[in-house]
Image (cartoon, rainbow, N blue to C red; front, side, top):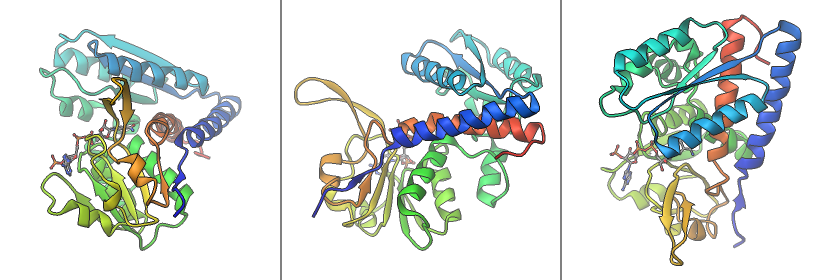
Length: 293
Ligand code: NDP
């Protein structure tokens, strides 16, 4: 059997960002609008700092405006909420993202719910969650949307396929399952209490792995020819003592069995920021009653 086709999220995301950049330029030329993203970072977590910086850089590269707000780790919840209110009221800010995780003394839910639903470009506000599950218009979480774009590009129509989502977090597993359901898949959501996970996975035409456990899903759990989307990002030290990133799928085994597979890095990761830019553009158009395409 030949190796699986690699699903190149890096190239797909570059093309998507180019398309967003062109639409952003049109919007400026025809309507005088510049989509704006406000990124709020609390504390000094090095990974969060890198994520936020990348989001801001790509925002500016797409022709959008970016407002960064760095706040100290000891900021009170009410001060953070005041910052959100300020951005909610600012017409030049179309999208607001608060980088998670937040320090323990702040209840993340309170902050997410404070974001104006039309500016909630992460799609985590309960009104956007409800819109997704009831098929209404809303803002779709970025990583799940990125997974769906890669799947549809790889497989075309997903109708009737058996999809297994491993992981049921609110920000990845559950919204991906909703999107797969909306695309007419038969969806199974697996989690830490699932019995006989290898057998559950073996029935899948599509596996989405969103667990956070390095190389947990083995090659012999995969139906030959299945399409594999690996959301997991895990930092490991390999046999040679080198640190590197791996997914939740055992890639070297899976590539021998699957039909198509995303690598880590270079698969789902780059799609997340591209979809954040897409959401900021969509939010700007909707807030100004302008056509999205
Ligand atoms: P969470 O920790 O919030 O959720 C993990 C899920 O995996 C839970 O539902 C948990 O089940 C399930 N799980 C844990 N152990 C097992 C097991 N042994 N068997 C089956 N299921 C299990 O993680 P996230 O959803 O936030 O993230 C998942 C992964 O995706 C992480 O590696 C994260 O870094 C990555 N990620 C990547 C992004 C990207 O841009 N590519 C963006 C966001 C996340 P239970 O509910 O029962 O505890």
